[in-house]
Image (cartoon, rainbow, N blue to C red; front, side, top):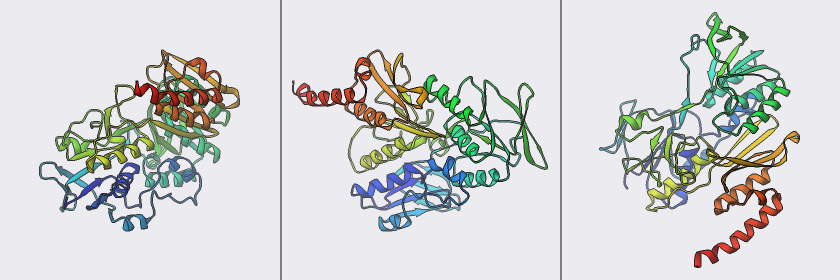
Length: 417
Protein backbone atom coordinates (compact mmCIF):
# COMPACT_ATOMS: atom_id res chain seq x y z
CA UNK A 1 0.00 0.00 0.00
CA UNK A 2 2.09 2.88 -1.31
CA UNK A 3 -0.06 5.64 0.20
CA UNK A 4 -0.37 3.80 3.49
CA UNK A 5 -2.72 4.51 6.37
CA UNK A 6 -3.91 7.99 7.30
CA UNK A 7 -5.39 8.45 10.77
CA UNK A 8 -7.59 11.50 11.38
CA UNK A 9 -7.56 12.42 15.05
CA UNK A 10 -4.68 12.16 17.53
CA UNK A 11 -6.49 11.41 20.77
CA UNK A 12 -6.27 8.11 22.62
CA UNK A 13 -7.80 6.17 19.71
CA UNK A 14 -5.71 7.67 16.91
CA UNK A 15 -2.38 7.38 18.71
CA UNK A 16 -3.08 3.78 19.73
CA UNK A 17 -4.03 2.90 16.14
CA UNK A 18 -0.71 4.26 14.88
CA UNK A 19 1.21 2.43 17.60
CA UNK A 20 -0.63 -0.85 17.01
CA UNK A 21 0.00 -0.75 13.26
CA UNK A 22 3.73 -0.64 13.92
CA UNK A 23 3.62 -3.15 16.78
CA UNK A 24 1.73 -5.61 14.56
CA UNK A 25 4.26 -5.31 11.74
CA UNK A 26 2.73 -2.84 9.31
CA UNK A 27 5.61 -1.34 7.31
CA UNK A 28 3.81 1.12 5.01
CA UNK A 29 3.43 4.86 5.59
CA UNK A 30 1.47 5.90 8.69
CA UNK A 31 0.31 9.51 8.85
CA UNK A 32 -1.34 10.79 12.05
CA UNK A 33 -3.27 14.05 11.71
CA UNK A 34 -4.36 16.36 14.53
CA UNK A 35 -6.24 19.64 14.36
CA UNK A 36 -4.46 20.69 17.57
CA UNK A 37 -0.91 22.04 17.70
CA UNK A 38 -0.02 19.95 20.76
CA UNK A 39 1.81 16.68 21.13
CA UNK A 40 -1.01 14.13 21.75
CA UNK A 41 -1.87 14.02 25.46
CA UNK A 42 -3.88 12.16 28.10
CA UNK A 43 -7.34 13.68 28.50
CA UNK A 44 -8.61 12.29 31.85
CA UNK A 45 -6.25 14.47 33.98
CA UNK A 46 -7.60 17.66 32.41
CA UNK A 47 -10.68 17.72 34.67
CA UNK A 48 -8.65 16.95 37.79
CA UNK A 49 -4.98 17.68 38.52
CA UNK A 50 -4.36 19.89 35.49
CA UNK A 51 -6.99 22.54 36.22
CA UNK A 52 -6.14 22.52 39.94
CA UNK A 53 -2.40 23.04 39.64
CA UNK A 54 -1.17 26.12 37.82
CA UNK A 55 2.20 24.42 37.29
CA UNK A 56 0.81 21.13 35.95
CA UNK A 57 2.01 20.10 32.52
CA UNK A 58 0.06 18.01 30.01
CA UNK A 59 0.90 14.32 30.08
CA UNK A 60 1.94 13.12 26.60
CA UNK A 61 0.43 9.87 25.37
CA UNK A 62 3.82 9.08 23.85
CA UNK A 63 7.08 10.97 23.85
CA UNK A 64 8.06 12.87 20.73
CA UNK A 65 10.79 10.29 20.07
CA UNK A 66 8.12 7.59 19.71
CA UNK A 67 6.71 9.12 16.54
CA UNK A 68 10.06 9.62 14.85
CA UNK A 69 11.43 6.31 16.10
CA UNK A 70 8.35 4.43 14.84
CA UNK A 71 8.28 6.22 11.48
CA UNK A 72 4.90 7.75 12.29
CA UNK A 73 4.42 11.00 10.40
CA UNK A 74 2.68 13.15 12.99
CA UNK A 75 1.12 16.29 11.51
CA UNK A 76 -0.31 18.75 14.05
CA UNK A 77 -2.52 21.71 13.26
CA UNK A 78 -4.05 20.20 10.11
CA UNK A 79 -7.72 20.72 9.26
CA UNK A 80 -9.59 18.56 6.74
CA UNK A 81 -12.29 19.96 4.50
CA UNK A 82 -13.47 16.81 2.76
CA UNK A 83 -13.02 13.07 2.34
CA UNK A 84 -13.03 11.94 -1.29
CA UNK A 85 -13.95 8.33 -0.55
CA UNK A 86 -14.00 7.19 -4.19
CA UNK A 87 -10.66 8.84 -4.95
CA UNK A 88 -9.18 7.73 -1.62
CA UNK A 89 -7.84 11.11 -0.68
CA UNK A 90 -8.34 13.89 1.84
CA UNK A 91 -8.79 17.50 0.83
CA UNK A 92 -7.08 19.74 3.37
CA UNK A 93 -8.08 23.27 4.34
CA UNK A 94 -4.86 24.70 2.90
CA UNK A 95 -5.79 23.36 -0.55
CA UNK A 96 -3.47 20.36 -0.47
CA UNK A 97 -4.61 16.77 -0.91
CA UNK A 98 -3.49 13.65 0.92
CA UNK A 99 -4.00 10.22 -0.66
CA UNK A 100 -4.57 7.07 1.38
CA UNK A 101 -4.96 3.36 0.92
CA UNK A 102 -6.75 2.99 4.27
CA UNK A 103 -8.26 5.74 6.39
CA UNK A 104 -9.01 5.55 10.11
CA UNK A 105 -11.44 8.13 11.46
CA UNK A 106 -10.70 8.80 15.12
CA UNK A 107 -12.48 12.13 15.09
CA UNK A 108 -13.85 11.91 18.63
CA UNK A 109 -16.61 14.15 19.92
CA UNK A 110 -17.21 17.72 21.02
CA UNK A 111 -19.19 19.29 23.86
CA UNK A 112 -22.89 19.77 23.32
CA UNK A 113 -23.60 23.50 23.55
CA UNK A 114 -27.16 24.61 24.38
CA UNK A 115 -28.81 27.55 22.68
CA UNK A 116 -28.82 29.60 25.87
CA UNK A 117 -29.14 33.39 25.93
CA UNK A 118 -25.80 34.75 27.11
CA UNK A 119 -23.75 31.68 26.16
CA UNK A 120 -21.51 33.90 24.05
CA UNK A 121 -20.18 35.79 27.10
CA UNK A 122 -16.53 35.30 27.91
CA UNK A 123 -16.15 33.04 30.95
CA UNK A 124 -18.60 30.52 29.48
CA UNK A 125 -16.51 27.46 28.69
CA UNK A 126 -16.59 23.70 28.14
CA UNK A 127 -13.87 21.09 28.52
CA UNK A 128 -12.68 18.86 25.72
CA UNK A 129 -9.16 19.95 24.83
CA UNK A 130 -5.95 21.08 26.47
CA UNK A 131 -6.69 24.63 25.34
CA UNK A 132 -10.06 24.42 27.14
CA UNK A 133 -8.36 23.16 30.31
CA UNK A 134 -5.82 25.97 30.21
CA UNK A 135 -8.64 28.50 29.92
CA UNK A 136 -10.57 26.94 32.82
CA UNK A 137 -7.44 26.99 34.95
CA UNK A 138 -6.82 30.64 34.12
CA UNK A 139 -10.43 31.66 34.79
CA UNK A 140 -10.54 29.63 38.01
CA UNK A 141 -7.75 31.75 39.44
CA UNK A 142 -9.92 34.82 38.85
CA UNK A 143 -13.25 33.32 40.01
CA UNK A 144 -14.91 32.96 43.38
CA UNK A 145 -18.20 31.50 42.13
CA UNK A 146 -18.48 28.81 39.47
CA UNK A 147 -21.67 27.35 38.00
CA UNK A 148 -21.48 24.00 36.20
CA UNK A 149 -24.28 23.02 33.85
CA UNK A 150 -24.63 19.25 33.81
CA UNK A 151 -24.29 16.53 36.43
CA UNK A 152 -22.35 14.00 34.38
CA UNK A 153 -18.82 12.73 34.94
CA UNK A 154 -16.99 15.75 33.55
CA UNK A 155 -19.11 18.27 35.44
CA UNK A 156 -18.80 16.42 38.74
CA UNK A 157 -15.06 15.81 38.39
CA UNK A 158 -14.55 19.53 37.80
CA UNK A 159 -16.90 20.41 40.66
CA UNK A 160 -14.87 18.29 43.09
CA UNK A 161 -11.57 19.70 41.81
CA UNK A 162 -12.57 23.36 41.97
CA UNK A 163 -14.26 22.98 45.37
CA UNK A 164 -11.06 21.48 46.75
CA UNK A 165 -9.27 24.53 45.33
CA UNK A 166 -11.52 26.86 47.33
CA UNK A 167 -14.14 27.89 44.79
CA UNK A 168 -17.88 28.08 45.52
CA UNK A 169 -19.35 25.62 43.03
CA UNK A 170 -22.98 25.08 42.07
CA UNK A 171 -23.93 22.15 39.80
CA UNK A 172 -27.21 22.50 37.90
CA UNK A 173 -28.70 19.30 36.48
CA UNK A 174 -31.89 19.40 34.41
CA UNK A 175 -33.12 15.92 35.38
CA UNK A 176 -33.90 14.76 38.89
CA UNK A 177 -30.62 12.97 39.61
CA UNK A 178 -26.93 13.02 38.78
CA UNK A 179 -25.18 10.73 36.30
CA UNK A 180 -28.51 9.72 34.82
CA UNK A 181 -27.14 7.92 31.76
CA UNK A 182 -24.14 6.39 33.44
CA UNK A 183 -24.73 4.73 36.82
CA UNK A 184 -27.36 3.15 39.04
CA UNK A 185 -29.40 5.40 41.37
CA UNK A 186 -27.58 4.15 44.49
CA UNK A 187 -24.25 5.30 43.04
CA UNK A 188 -25.68 8.64 41.92
CA UNK A 189 -27.13 9.26 45.38
CA UNK A 190 -23.83 8.38 47.03
CA UNK A 191 -21.84 10.70 44.77
CA UNK A 192 -24.25 13.52 45.49
CA UNK A 193 -24.01 13.03 49.24
CA UNK A 194 -20.18 13.02 49.18
CA UNK A 195 -19.99 16.13 47.00
CA UNK A 196 -22.51 18.07 49.08
CA UNK A 197 -20.54 17.18 52.20
CA UNK A 198 -17.54 19.00 50.70
CA UNK A 199 -19.58 22.13 49.98
CA UNK A 200 -20.74 21.62 46.39
CA UNK A 201 -24.27 22.94 45.92
CA UNK A 202 -26.30 20.66 43.66
CA UNK A 203 -29.58 21.69 42.06
CA UNK A 204 -31.35 18.84 40.27
CA UNK A 205 -34.53 19.03 38.24
CA UNK A 206 -33.58 22.65 37.51
CA UNK A 207 -32.88 24.37 34.20
CA UNK A 208 -31.07 27.58 33.36
CA UNK A 209 -33.10 30.18 31.47
CA UNK A 210 -30.28 32.56 30.59
CA UNK A 211 -26.86 33.86 31.52
CA UNK A 212 -26.22 37.43 32.59
CA UNK A 213 -23.05 39.42 32.20
CA UNK A 214 -21.35 42.79 32.24
CA UNK A 215 -18.66 44.18 29.96
CA UNK A 216 -18.94 41.04 27.87
CA UNK A 217 -18.13 38.65 30.75
CA UNK A 218 -20.56 36.30 32.47
CA UNK A 219 -21.67 37.28 35.97
CA UNK A 220 -24.59 34.97 36.78
CA UNK A 221 -26.78 32.08 35.68
CA UNK A 222 -30.52 32.60 36.06
CA UNK A 223 -32.67 29.54 36.71
CA UNK A 224 -36.08 28.98 35.12
CA UNK A 225 -37.64 29.87 38.48
CA UNK A 226 -35.72 33.15 38.58
CA UNK A 227 -32.99 32.35 41.11
CA UNK A 228 -29.76 34.21 40.38
CA UNK A 229 -26.62 32.11 40.75
CA UNK A 230 -23.49 34.30 40.84
CA UNK A 231 -20.77 33.05 38.50
CA UNK A 232 -17.54 34.46 37.17
CA UNK A 233 -17.22 31.23 35.20
CA UNK A 234 -19.90 28.94 33.78
CA UNK A 235 -18.79 25.49 32.63
CA UNK A 236 -21.05 23.60 30.23
CA UNK A 237 -20.92 19.83 30.65
CA UNK A 238 -24.20 18.48 29.27
CA UNK A 239 -22.78 15.73 27.10
CA UNK A 240 -21.03 15.45 23.77
CA UNK A 241 -21.82 15.18 20.07
CA UNK A 242 -19.86 12.73 17.88
CA UNK A 243 -17.82 14.34 15.12
CA UNK A 244 -19.42 12.68 12.11
CA UNK A 245 -19.65 15.54 9.64
CA UNK A 246 -16.68 14.54 7.47
CA UNK A 247 -17.94 10.97 7.24
CA UNK A 248 -21.53 11.96 6.55
CA UNK A 249 -20.53 14.37 3.77
CA UNK A 250 -18.51 11.55 2.19
CA UNK A 251 -21.58 9.31 2.02
CA UNK A 252 -20.50 7.05 4.90
CA UNK A 253 -23.38 5.61 6.95
CA UNK A 254 -24.02 7.51 10.19
CA UNK A 255 -26.38 6.45 13.01
CA UNK A 256 -25.62 8.07 16.38
CA UNK A 257 -22.02 8.03 15.27
CA UNK A 258 -20.12 6.61 12.32
CA UNK A 259 -21.57 3.14 11.86
CA UNK A 260 -18.99 0.33 11.92
CA UNK A 261 -19.04 -3.46 11.74
CA UNK A 262 -17.32 -5.84 14.16
CA UNK A 263 -13.94 -5.19 12.48
CA UNK A 264 -14.35 -1.38 12.76
CA UNK A 265 -15.03 -0.95 9.02
CA UNK A 266 -17.49 1.70 7.91
CA UNK A 267 -19.88 1.35 4.98
CA UNK A 268 -16.84 2.18 2.83
CA UNK A 269 -14.57 -0.84 3.54
CA UNK A 270 -11.31 1.07 3.06
CA UNK A 271 -12.37 3.53 5.76
CA UNK A 272 -12.53 2.52 9.43
CA UNK A 273 -13.82 4.45 12.47
CA UNK A 274 -12.92 4.08 16.15
CA UNK A 275 -13.45 5.73 19.51
CA UNK A 276 -16.09 8.23 20.61
CA UNK A 277 -17.31 8.79 17.04
CA UNK A 278 -17.98 5.10 16.24
CA UNK A 279 -21.33 3.35 16.80
CA UNK A 280 -21.72 -0.41 16.60
CA UNK A 281 -23.71 -3.46 17.68
CA UNK A 282 -22.29 -4.51 21.04
CA UNK A 283 -21.56 -8.19 21.56
CA UNK A 284 -22.43 -8.06 25.27
CA UNK A 285 -25.93 -6.61 25.00
CA UNK A 286 -26.94 -7.07 21.37
CA UNK A 287 -27.85 -3.37 21.28
CA UNK A 288 -26.39 -0.47 19.32
CA UNK A 289 -24.01 1.67 21.34
CA UNK A 290 -21.49 4.47 21.10
CA UNK A 291 -19.14 4.36 24.07
CA UNK A 292 -17.17 7.37 25.25
CA UNK A 293 -14.17 6.00 27.13
CA UNK A 294 -10.41 5.69 26.84
CA UNK A 295 -10.63 1.90 27.15
CA UNK A 296 -13.11 1.58 24.31
CA UNK A 297 -11.03 3.90 22.12
CA UNK A 298 -7.78 2.01 22.62
CA UNK A 299 -9.34 -1.45 22.28
CA UNK A 300 -11.02 -0.46 19.02
CA UNK A 301 -7.76 1.07 17.79
CA UNK A 302 -5.90 -2.20 18.34
CA UNK A 303 -8.59 -4.10 16.45
CA UNK A 304 -8.63 -1.60 13.57
CA UNK A 305 -4.90 -2.13 13.11
CA UNK A 306 -5.42 -5.89 12.95
CA UNK A 307 -8.22 -5.43 10.42
CA UNK A 308 -5.93 -3.42 8.16
CA UNK A 309 -3.31 -6.16 8.45
CA UNK A 310 -5.80 -8.72 7.17
CA UNK A 311 -7.15 -10.29 10.34
CA UNK A 312 -10.87 -10.90 10.81
CA UNK A 313 -11.20 -10.68 14.60
CA UNK A 314 -14.53 -9.43 15.93
CA UNK A 315 -14.71 -6.76 18.63
CA UNK A 316 -15.26 -8.59 21.93
CA UNK A 317 -13.53 -6.35 24.47
CA UNK A 318 -15.23 -6.11 27.85
CA UNK A 319 -16.20 -2.45 28.40
CA UNK A 320 -14.88 -0.74 31.49
CA UNK A 321 -14.80 2.85 32.67
CA UNK A 322 -13.61 4.98 35.56
CA UNK A 323 -14.06 8.37 37.15
CA UNK A 324 -12.35 10.14 40.06
CA UNK A 325 -14.79 12.46 41.85
CA UNK A 326 -13.30 13.85 45.02
CA UNK A 327 -12.65 10.95 47.39
CA UNK A 328 -14.57 8.54 45.16
CA UNK A 329 -12.71 6.21 42.81
CA UNK A 330 -15.59 4.94 40.70
CA UNK A 331 -14.87 1.97 38.43
CA UNK A 332 -17.40 0.26 36.19
CA UNK A 333 -17.23 -2.90 34.10
CA UNK A 334 -19.91 -4.25 31.77
CA UNK A 335 -23.09 -2.51 30.64
CA UNK A 336 -25.88 -2.48 33.22
CA UNK A 337 -28.80 -1.29 31.09
CA UNK A 338 -31.70 -3.73 31.41
CA UNK A 339 -30.78 -4.90 34.89
CA UNK A 340 -33.61 -5.98 37.21
CA UNK A 341 -31.80 -6.78 40.47
CA UNK A 342 -28.52 -6.15 42.24
CA UNK A 343 -26.30 -7.33 45.09
CA UNK A 344 -24.25 -4.91 47.23
CA UNK A 345 -20.87 -5.86 48.71
CA UNK A 346 -19.09 -3.64 51.18
CA UNK A 347 -20.34 -0.67 53.17
CA UNK A 348 -21.87 2.38 51.50
CA UNK A 349 -21.36 4.43 54.67
CA UNK A 350 -17.63 3.69 54.60
CA UNK A 351 -17.38 4.84 50.96
CA UNK A 352 -16.17 1.36 49.92
CA UNK A 353 -18.71 -0.85 48.16
CA UNK A 354 -19.59 -2.57 44.89
CA UNK A 355 -22.91 -3.20 43.17
CA UNK A 356 -23.33 -6.33 41.06
CA UNK A 357 -26.12 -5.85 38.51
CA UNK A 358 -28.20 -8.72 37.14
CA UNK A 359 -30.79 -9.40 34.48
CA UNK A 360 -32.36 -12.55 35.84
CA UNK A 361 -29.39 -14.72 36.80
CA UNK A 362 -26.99 -13.13 34.27
CA UNK A 363 -24.36 -10.73 35.59
CA UNK A 364 -24.45 -7.55 33.47
CA UNK A 365 -21.87 -5.40 35.18
CA UNK A 366 -20.30 -4.14 38.38
CA UNK A 367 -19.99 -0.62 39.76
CA UNK A 368 -17.28 -0.22 42.40
CA UNK A 369 -16.53 2.66 44.75
CA UNK A 370 -13.01 2.48 46.22
CA UNK A 371 -12.90 -1.32 45.78
CA UNK A 372 -10.48 -1.81 42.88
CA UNK A 373 -10.11 -5.52 43.60
CA UNK A 374 -13.80 -6.07 42.86
CA UNK A 375 -13.41 -4.20 39.59
CA UNK A 376 -10.41 -6.22 38.42
CA UNK A 377 -12.10 -9.50 39.37
CA UNK A 378 -15.23 -8.35 37.53
CA UNK A 379 -13.24 -7.75 34.37
CA UNK A 380 -11.84 -11.27 34.61
CA UNK A 381 -15.29 -12.79 35.18
CA UNK A 382 -17.01 -10.99 32.32
CA UNK A 383 -14.04 -11.61 30.05
CA UNK A 384 -14.26 -15.34 30.78
CA UNK A 385 -18.02 -15.40 30.21
CA UNK A 386 -18.59 -16.35 33.84
CA UNK A 387 -21.78 -15.21 35.52
CA UNK A 388 -21.76 -16.04 39.24
CA UNK A 389 -25.07 -16.40 41.01
CA UNK A 390 -26.15 -13.63 43.37
CA UNK A 391 -25.66 -16.11 46.18
CA UNK A 392 -22.01 -16.62 45.16
CA UNK A 393 -21.47 -12.85 45.01
CA UNK A 394 -22.77 -12.59 48.56
CA UNK A 395 -19.92 -14.85 49.76
CA UNK A 396 -17.45 -12.06 48.92
CA UNK A 397 -14.26 -11.79 46.86
CA UNK A 398 -12.70 -15.06 48.06
CA UNK A 399 -15.80 -17.04 47.15
CA UNK A 400 -15.95 -15.34 43.74
CA UNK A 401 -12.30 -16.08 43.02
CA UNK A 402 -12.82 -19.73 43.87
CA UNK A 403 -15.95 -19.95 41.72
CA UNK A 404 -14.17 -18.32 38.77
CA UNK A 405 -11.23 -20.71 39.09
CA UNK A 406 -13.60 -23.69 39.11
CA UNK A 407 -15.44 -22.34 36.07
CA UNK A 408 -12.19 -21.90 34.16
CA UNK A 409 -11.09 -25.43 34.99
CA UNK A 410 -14.40 -26.84 33.76
CA UNK A 411 -14.51 -24.73 30.59
CA UNK A 412 -12.10 -26.91 28.51
CA UNK A 413 -14.11 -29.98 29.52
CA UNK A 414 -17.36 -28.38 28.39
CA UNK A 415 -15.77 -27.29 25.10
CA UNK A 416 -14.61 -30.86 24.41
CA UNK A 417 -18.00 -32.44 25.01
